[in-house]
Length: 494
Image (tube, rainbow, N blue to C red):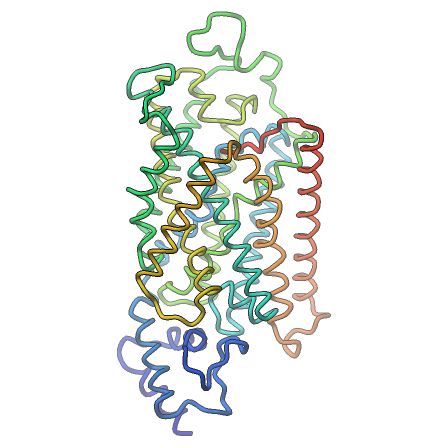
């Protein structure tokens, strides 16, 4: 009885509130103290042993240390971070994807994926709220034990490494063209500063690494906001170019009859299905994945409630939905999907176009500033997997970041085609993070006495997870068939 009186009296001091006290179960889960704290019980306190005396002091010390940053990130900054995490490099290939579906079918698919992403965030927040855990890996531990924790950590790591790789691929191929345009050249050279491999190393060391060494994700809210501003500028340029470029169009300096877009291709398709349509779904699924970042952002949110975090998720998804659809539509109505590389197609019209040069710079800045955001969940997953219960240590924090950047740079330099990254990542890790794991976590974590398996929410969660398995199987099947046929189809991204 003394414990039940002491804890609230301490937490009633200025600086503490009920939302922060709700974090106690998660903090307990991070405590190395062997008594009264059981990781297999999802961070809940063992009431049989009780936390009196020294154990209560340890608990309160942990709370005070975490609350030094806990709850300091505003609603707006959280939206910036989550939107930046959602924004995939696949945005550059959405116009090509639309050419394989038509405008109407693309809108239907995009709407479905966006709604399913919001529902997935709801499942994660509901599961996290029941057990007091705000870590994706710990939800896996609570649902399926250590195998679940390992599986969640591995999927997050593989998916975000694929995302980081795709961002650096854009830097690798776009930055040399920007430098080339600055120099007034229309052809590439063999100078070292025109070599994309050298450039991504320089960008990683000088820009990405310092940001990746930030202790908290909330600190990146300002850079995320600037990154999104760059993409808004990119969208504005795409819309402007739609009314500035006519179809068919000639390549720069080419006065022959050869054109980038032939006359017969300048026809708007509203609904079409072909073999390449199968690649559209993985592109869209990969573009809306932000789920590894949801719980870390929730942890650092000021006044953290499920409704507030769900609103952040809904606003972020809606914002990126609008950006995706308008980018795809106006890009498609400009070139009608004749090229998978939107920015490269603009350069074919005029490689020295000042506006396109500014757009390239904006996209490069945006994707570069996104890399540290997606690196945070990987580092957190590795720490949960390799160093569970360990307190924060700068050396470990820095070592993991440097190792990850080194590995991703190596991957980008050695893998010649981004297609493999988009195909496999979009067809395996994306449905796992959006559909399968949130649905299974919800079924396993929500107590049966609250919601039996026959209840509508759990049936919906089961169908949601099953949809993920179906989507994964279909996507992998189409990709394998494409490899067997030997056809060189692009997923429409970098």
